[in-house]
Amino acid sequence: MAHFQAEPIRCLLIPIVGHNLLLPAGVVAEVVGYQEPDPLPDRLVDQQWLLGFAGWRDQEVPVISMDAVMTGERAAPNIRARIVILKGLGQRAQLPYFGILTQELPRLTTLSEPSVEQLEEFAPLPGIHCQVLAGGEPALLPDLEEIESQMCTALFG
Image 1: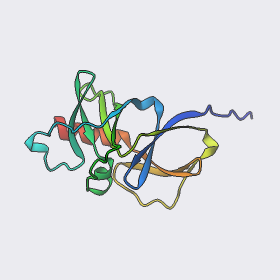
Image 2: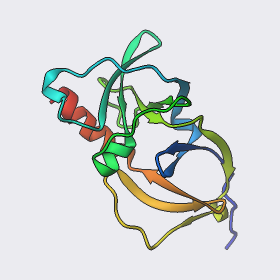
Image 3: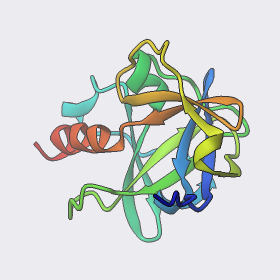
Image 4: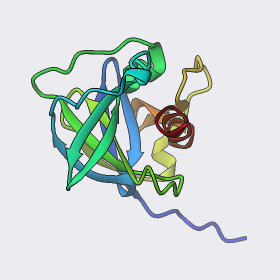
């Protein structure tokens, strides 16, 4: 049986506090400079992981803190903070895009299947699918479907 080598995938390592998120570049629409998100409606103020809405390309995009998704605590943006605008994966008309706060400019990397290894000793974290070594560097794979689902429930009921 022939073995076919998978094509290398362009990915982004997105720095959050204490970790890097690993995402395929194809789900990233744009990386923009940090702007203080517009406040959430009063009914959502207890959702620590939802930071508010940022203006992007003539629309309001919800912005989340992955730190708060994972730990319940928000990290304050630093001077190098950015917002990574992601394409919604769930085909939800009301959530075509959303943003993730990153502490620094994401790094582009190209990975092939042999250079990504899932780590078995992984303590589960909310919003995280698994932890991997990506080219020898530890990274977290976010569960974007679950995050989008929670965001839609919080924002749209």
